[in-house]
Length: 309
Image (cartoon, rainbow, N blue to C red):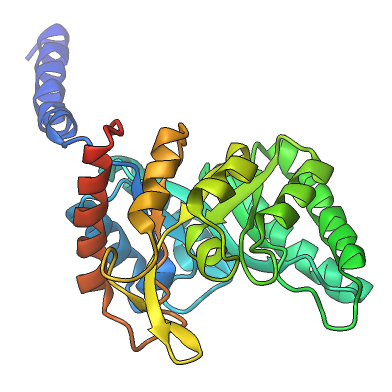
């Protein structure tokens, strides 16, 4: 075979081998902007997370621990050379990592404890940059008893200001979640306004602002909707002095109304399912809850005319 003929043969062979992959990519159906948090599948391996997300029709994955390891910088698939392989696997399935969920919180008063929290958040920001992830969630978390609220707010704001400055050159945005003692939109609005950074925004846990904050979805969105970049959506019912999480649309939380408010407001992020199986092992397994959420949420988003990815 001549050199020219050999080149022609290899080019034809290469095109033939590439064609199936291209056809598969073209044939993959478009998906809604739905994701799930890995907090909901604490026993799944990373391979299972990817396979199930693709199989169930999700477009995104929110990483909040893998196989019980909550420090994502220690997860094998997110370290060293395996990180590049993980990025390729995600791209091959058309999956997006919506954000990384850190456990860091900004309310600590002790300087050493506060710095430790900042350090964790910075490590997650670095990982997000390497993984190509836009957002890192960090908590404001608590208002310690006996401390004036304004003092705690200033400390939380200072922590997030430092993190936003650190995240800016990394191309990452830090998100405060409506969580813990920070479920009132007026408090979140104050923090977001004072920090005033393009690299600091909000993760709206719509369950918490409704159940703990006693706010209607439309009222919450009216006050802090412009900062919303990601969501946590879930349903629940009263259970004694607490709540029990239930399958989406079967409880007393107005999840469909929350989705409607987001869609009508022009929200462009993911509608993420935070099934807290890692904290509440008694609730349904992810094999039940995840496909249920995908079906219900896709139906609602279809009704609202939300565009597919």
